Structures are given as C-alpha cells and as structure tokens.
Amino acid sequence: MSAPDRRRWWALAALALSVLVVGLDLTVLNLALPTLATDLHASTTQLQWIVDAYSLVLAALLLPAGLLGDRFGRKRLLLGALALFGAASLACAYASSPTGLIAARAVLGVGAAVIIPLSLSVLPVLFSEEERQRAITITVGATFVAFPIGPILGGWLLTHYWWGSVFLINVPVIVLALLAVAVLMPESRSLRTPGLDPVGILASGLGLAALTYGAIDAGQHGWGNARALTAMLAGVLVLAAFVGWERWVSRRPGGQPLVDLSLFGSRRFTWGTALATLVSFALFGLLFAVPQYYQVVRGTDAMGAGLRLLPLIGGLMVGAAAADRLARRAGAKVTVALGFALMAAGLGIGATSSLQTGEGVTLGWVALLGAGFGFAMPTAMDAALSALSKEHSGVGSALIMAIRQVGATIGVAVLGSVLLAGYHARLDLTGLPEQAADAVRDSAAAGVVLAHQLGSAALADSVRAAFVHGMDLLLWTCGGLAAAGAVLALAFLPRRAGAVPAPGGVSESTVEEYVAR
Image (spheres, one colour):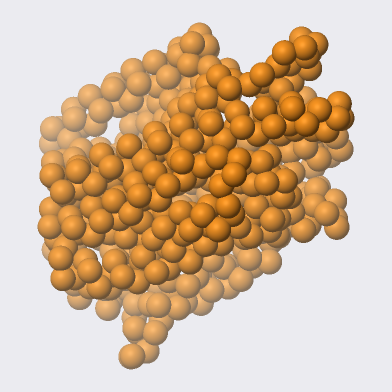
C-alpha cells in the first residue's frame, strides 16, 4: 500500500473517531437522567429539554453545516466542530443548573451538526467506487460501536463517579480525533465557491426543527396533542415553502440553491437515502425497546444491557464484510434486499418473545438483526453517496443525514407509541390506587419498582408481561417495514451504486490532489 493510500485509511480512522464521540454522547445521556433529576433538581420538563435541545439544534443546522464545509473547507470546519464539541462537553460536565446544562447541550448539537455530515462528505472525495463501501462500513460501524459501549462505560462511570463524568469521557476521544484529523486528513472543498442562500438556510432550519420538535412532542404526549400536531404541520409547510424557494433559485440565471433538488431525480440518491432511513427506523426501534427489555424484564442494570447488545456489533461486522464482497458480484439491489430480509427474520423471531424466552434466543436474533444492518446500511448509503459530486458532497451528505435524522426521530415517536399502546393493553391494575396506577402506566420500570415496594409478585408479572407484549408489537411493526424495504430495494434500487459523478470538471485525479495536500 502506497503512502497516499495509507494516509487515506488513517484519515478514515480519524473520521470514525469523530463519529464515535457523537454516538457516545447520545447513548450515555439517558443513563444519567435519573441522577440529573436528583442532583440538579431538574423537573421533568427540564429533563426533556436537556435531551431535546441537542436534537433540535442538530436538525436545524445539518444542511448549513454541509454547505459551509463545501465553501470553506471540510477539514477546517471539522476541526472547529470537534473543538466546540469538546468545550461543550466540559460545560455539560460542570453545569451547575438545568438551564446551564440545556444551553451546553444545544452547543453540543452545533458541533454534532458539523461532525456528522462532514465525516461522510469526504468519503466520495478520498475513496474510489471500489473502496467507498468499505469506508462507509467503517464510519457507520463507529456509530454502532457507541450503542453498546455507551451504556457499559456510562453505567460504570455513574456507579463510581459523579454524573458529569459521562460527559468528560468525550474529552479524551475528542483530543485524539483532533490530533488525527489535523495530521492525517487532507483539506477538501468545492473548487467553485457555492453561494450561501440565506433564505434557504433559514427555511430549512426552521422547518426541520419544527418537524423534529413536533415528532418528539408527539412521542411524549401522544399523537393527538395539539402542540405536537401544530409544530409538525408548521414544519411541513415551511419545508414545502423551502422546496418552492429552492426550485425558484435554481431557475434563476446564476442561482445557487442550498440543495440541488435534481438529486431526487437520481434513483441511487432517492432510494439509497430512503432505504438507509428505513434501516435507521428499525435500528432505533431495537435500541428503544431491547435495553428496556433487559432492565425491566431480565433485571439487569444499564451496563449489563449494554453488554448484551454486543452481538449487534458482531453481526454487523460479519454482515458488512460479506456485503462488501456480495455487492461487487451481485450489486447493490440484491445486497440491500438481503440485508432487509435478514432484518425482517431477526425482528420476526424477536417479536415472538415471551417471559419464558431464553436469553440465548434474544442474543441470537439481535446478532441476526446486526448482520442485516451490516448488509443493508453501508450499501444503501454507498448508493446515495455515489450520486454526489465531489463539488457538493458536503451539503449532499448533510441532506442525507437530515432526512435520516428526521426519519429516525419520527420513527422513535411512532414506535414508542406502539410499544406504549401494547403495554397499556395488557396491564392489570386492579386494586391499585389511582396515583400508583398512573405511575405504572407511565413507565414499566416504575411499575417494577412499585411492585417490589408493595411486595406484589402479581403486579411485577403483569408489568413485565405487558412490556413484552408492547415490545412484540413494536418488533412486528419494524419487521413489516423491513420486509417492505426488501421489496422496495428489489423494485427501485439500481443494481450498481455507480461511480461518483464529476460535474464541473472534477475528475478522479482530484482524489490524489486532495491526498497530496
């Protein structure tokens, strides 16, 4: 392997570190919420905003961040975002009030909005068509690693140290990522400076933030909640206006819209993005339900739940390695469809869970599901990224991630509602005082705690059985979507991902030019 080749793969390792730190922050926060409620005297509303401030800022800034990377340099912006993420992590760790923590979490969202799309945007620049799927697998794999590692590490830290330590774990990873990106990653930017499109930036940010907020609110307060419906409707209307504005700008002589809507004329981009979003939907369903299953039904702690998610990573590694070879022989269509079929099989097995289901069965279907992710996600993402030019890979990657982010947020809200409805349908609250019954309805974890306090084995069994029923409904829903994903991949995804287009005279030699810098 030549020196430029080695440098590209080491640069990829730096990007994977950047993505890993974002994933760790997402997975450890939920563990710390009960402690934050006590130590910072945070109300339920404040706890929700500690979580939601990050998501709203992330959704609003993804597209502008991608554009700024294309305009000013992706390495430069990524270094600044990593430094900001590290500083915000320190601010979170030492926040002395809920308001201060909410503000610091919002700044974390700013950093993540740059890190996430720019980590993807350099892949079409650095890697050829043959190498790109392997590079995507490594980047996506870094995100997956955070899901079991976060609870394991976070649970250990919360057991032995104060709550701020779950944010401090970001700092050493950030330092390593900063050094690696600074030394190893070449600078890249659009050879033709893109316009800023301030109206498009404002409209896309407001629309995505409103839609995300509405979906979060619906997940917390129900789909009939007036505030949630109003926010989602407002988000849809603003995004529709954004699309109209982008079309108008693109027709103007010399117009430079924020988003090139002609991308949606590419089946690779449209269906690659749609199918990657569908994978995210199923993934977040798993991550929403299974850790709770282990803690509520199996009685493990957060660290134990994280350890039991490790088969997901094993399955992903096996699936991704096989997918790379299969995609070269059979193409993207078959590879993605096989991935969704494996996901549907794993979810179908999981959906038959009961209180008597052995742990080996659960670990097995989680591993099978991971293999399905390994086949489907990197290949679908490769198809979408292959439609992007090197000129506009920043904003194009941001568009992919914005669609996935909103889809995942809506997915968690929908699937959470499915689980809650199934849980409520099987609860037996006979003889419980109204206040106690409300606590059990609100949370299966609270129901198990209350059952232990009352010494009621019948109530504990009812809560556990009801939760498993709700989880089964959620997994059947995800399994149905995975089966639909297999059909859609076969029907609409092109057989090959295809080479990266090179408008504006950008050729494959540009890769060597960037690497040599």
